[in-house]
Image (tube, rainbow, N blue to C red; front, side, top):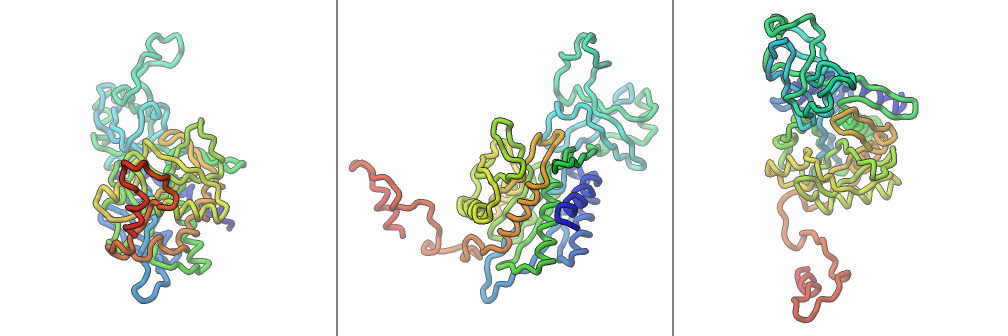
Length: 389
């Protein structure tokens, strides 16, 4: 099977597994079965984060361990009220707008049964002659879930076994086009998961030599903000996050390109690790663009917020319409596999990152030889930096 066919098969299977954040047991089990079939060691946390280990070939004191992280959870909703007419009001799971919920086909998981339905705005009909259609606010109080069941009141809905707190998953309904695009819901970040699994498969099948241990994390709560907060082992010195990045139409991004992010809503990523990824992309001819993901908060940010002393970087495949009807291209996913393999087979950014370091080994970000001279009235930055070498 070609790599693209393998990516397609894995991604479609992932998309077929409902996994809104908080309802991810089955997708975690799927990841475990995939790793087991490749003979890769892994463990799984209480809540379902899967942590695989690819052994490095380091000797002696060894190289610092590194990690690649991606999330398997997706947006979704939860029943918050049953209306008198039997329809449901829902609360969003994850950060997504009700504007993108209208028309979504969903699956409701009651305790004893499963049902289908549609998220719709609270208007009686859609003709332009219906006064007030355009005036309905775009918020979650004006979105209701219409069940595909013959119920007309609250009692009828409750008789089905549906209750407040039941999970609601967005049906992906993927389309794989002949030109290489794949369109549907929940591509964020299951396409990234498929690429990461493909990279692991290449490491195993080609018996690639890794300079240091690589831990691969599949987190289950990134969508709600916590993500990799508790799953990073102390020996991990750097963390590369793989995710979906929706690029505005004003920024012409090639369908096969990757995005190397330099910061997000929580601040900048690590200067040196990000530069390392950029150099790997350049050396391997992988098309990339540099961006600041101003509205993003992902596993890298969650790891830092949890207090982990790790270098962080984020690389994303070409995406469009995050948390709506999403789209990516298999060429971008194939390029992601190549960059991940380049990273895994490269040496750690700094060999001394096995622990805290000394100022003699600590890194530089400013080259004194490239600084402009300062006016005489100011301390000379060039002299200060040179004295600190």
